[in-house]
Length: 451
Image (cartoon, rainbow, N blue to C red; front, side, top):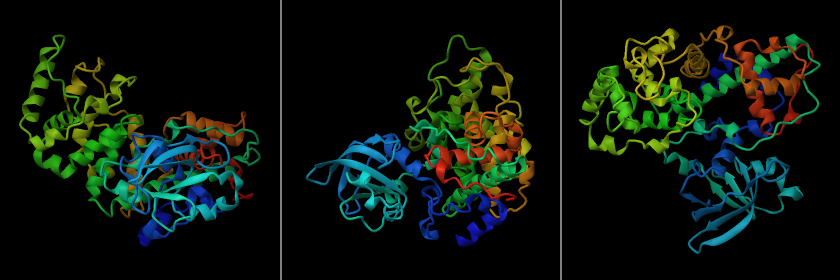
């Protein structure tokens, strides 16, 4: 594993410039290779706050069962992460109340000086990812082994911006830097963002075949922000190898994916055209022949977020793109143009039977660019490729995170030219998650003059 991480440093050489001076901050804890966690504490905070992500079966480090009566109130001020939590502990069902702190490793409690901080005096619970030495007086709840039993769970499904946070304001810490310094700093942060993505993929590759890892990432990307989890669930339920063996064509693969999604309509709509009715009939003809084991694992319509989705982004359309990607997964790594190139199919030749939209590209260039930058380039790095051409990354559109971070760093009168490159925009997103959303803007290390 160490060799892999060292090779990633070589792929993203400027990422170390961004991390310089931040090794001891909470978002970048130094961890041994066998206890590596390439996410942030905020991922665990979001998991704990949301019962949809939080494991149903929890236990203390001593093996006592834990029932969450109330996870606590998310604290955006100084002090523990959650206030006034209430948990039911053990066979005796002891009701314990108090504040709750979250760390990746148990020694984070000592490293961050909580033992001598009066604001942590009411802390009773210590939720950690890795098991480790317990802190006297705290009930420790480790998560690693529990989460490992759920193959469908992924921290990458969690939208960190969907949970409470506040944006700091005031000093514009990078206002005085010259444009070249700003660009260098942002692009170094951008390389760090891609390095972390590659690191997560490298860890996944230790347990799964490369094609399956990439298949799951592509599926999650087709789910966009709101439907990452169900798309990833489909990819784990129906691995790429099994899909290819059962369905020999993209059309049959689509029938499998649509049936497994739970979104295949039960009955034809009288308003459908004859072509649409014929298409759905062929889908059903293939799906009903599948094993009961597979049908029993189908998702429910309630597993999907469908309200407010643009018709062109509806899952029933994106699954057709997935059906084509399934047969060219690894080929996409060297032929990016295949992301938007699809043969004739129902969804790009007919008006939709479900989404009421005209025929259009299954995947637009903007989404393809996001897949290239966030998945394909990091995956190539994770599998040992050094030919990444980072300077030629496609530029994704600006978004609210990019604009907010730029304003916070550079002030209201900054020029957007400093973040016109793809790497610079990735850098702003990285800084947002490392410093803004975690209330650590004061810890940001401004690069020295000329650096």
